[in-house]
Image 1: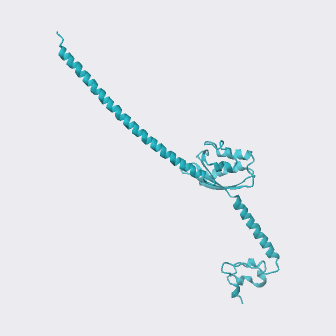
Image 2: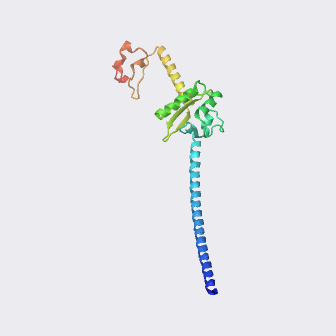
Image 3: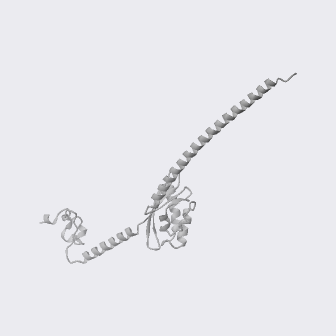
Length: 232
């Protein structure tokens, strides 16, 4: 039969219109996807920036501590630590990296003669067992340079633990000097020919033993709780 040119042209035009409509719909869909992607990207970037700022504050806070701080995971491998932690034990900051095992850290310091005491590695192993069993333990480390470090370990929920390492050298020296001064005073009073005694803030006798061994000679126990002005 004869070809109906008009009908053919109409169908071709309809096909082009359908294609154009599909193209416009595709373009709108792509445009919407781009907008959504940009919005999502912006939100992700904003969250990432907020997390970075929060992390920077956290790092700044632990780095400002005068104590050494370290966090280990459930396998006793380092998660993070501040500079003070490395300084206390003379550790190379590059060695104190995430993933290093606590016993390797202790062994490293022991091999370099940092500790004044022996069997530190064995004691560190015992400390790990205590943390696992009780969730808490404490240790005192005496270092070769005369420093004394008090360590407090606390377990974390979900495994792992955190420890604070405090240099208590000055405190221990002060305690030692106080004990030495008390001993000197006690020795002096014990050899003194004078009577000596101890009173509280209200000037009442508080301890017969403070009469330097002479309590039995005059019944000093009877004077406890009294003041000198109350005595006959």
